[in-house]
Length: 224
Image (tube, rainbow, N blue to C red):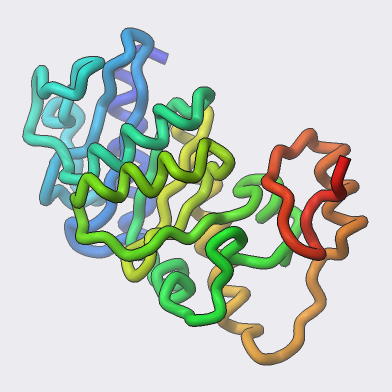
């Protein structure tokens, strides 16, 4: 896909996320890795609902601004995911309500913020890590992401919001939407003793769809 088309896709999908209430005001940011190693990033203080393709931040391989408006303060967060997730070509970070609410619950396991509730959650998100709270834009969040060693494509930032990487921009958007819907399901069913997918069902999905997930708990993939 050409850079011109990628710019248009960032704006189109950003507007879709905004219009459906998945990230309010000027919250949230999107980036796409380019063939030359640089990135296109949404600007700081920009609403995803009204992005201008020509004003997106164009960064060099070493993160310097080449053209466009000043980039989001969350560039270190995006860079850490690209560094640790070799196949990642896009990163989406939102302030979606249910995912933020989930990140604030005391019982959440940092190694698996959500149980295996649905097949599509596992297929699109795998397991989701929870990292501690950091001030927005704090470079320390990059170290927290790097500490996950590339094992997670979906991450919750405590008291902040979800961030997801994908091998395409569309894949990252679909995954973060699935994460938000699964967080909503969790909140709706909290305290009701719902039925989750069994270890065997998770193993079947892993085998059939070639999923790569960190081993975790009684519902995780079986040990080899």
